[in-house]
Image (cartoon, rainbow, N blue to C red):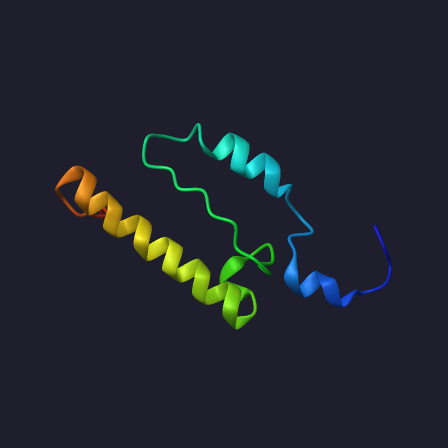
Length: 79
């Protein structure tokens, strides 16, 4: 912990242990994709542009892979 802000905080996750996420994330199901987002912060969507673009690319690639694997596109249910 530090009382000072460091520029490196703009390009790293200072909240979670990325290695733990990659290790335990694989146990979430059969459609799990692990990707390292270089320069990503804790909330990847709020990362700098290059990391944010890689994040969106990874998300949409994963969604397309579900369509290919299952034959259907995942839908959300609303009540």
